View (cartoon, rainbow, N blue to C red):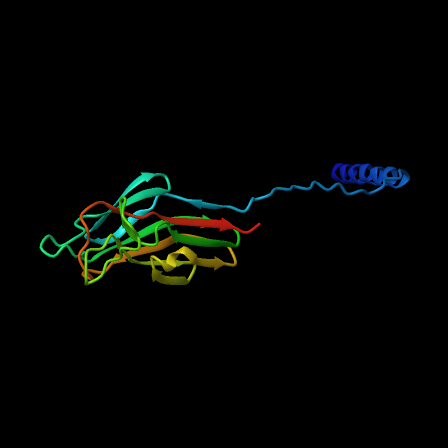
Length: 194
């Protein structure tokens, strides 16, 4: 009997609450909390590194730059260029569609204070020599001469992450070169779409 009373009292308490709740007029409303953020379109580059090379080395000079050095540019008995090649990995993360552009500042290796019209040939000493440059990124690949590299680009229509691969090669032979320091600048730019 005691148990019954407790049950009855418990039920009565709930019954009373239900009656009170029905007597009050509650209106339902939703409250919404909106979270908003924006990830700006960007390409982030890290320091490049050499993955392979023949007669060439690569020294990083900054967080996204470096110097490609030809170990021995010419054959000491013929003054003709020696075969040289190097492959660089450029770690990149782009979170939006973008374009990668590559250009050669001189269009080839030019002797300091040299004349680009005095090209390497079999009939005399040259002060300008072209090389090949290749670029692979986001499933696409381009390969051109340094002279054609002024307009090299790859369009990626969505974000991509990984290593852009840059190959630079100088074929051996082709005629003797005038003694001196030869240089060029290869500029690789990642341009994010707005």
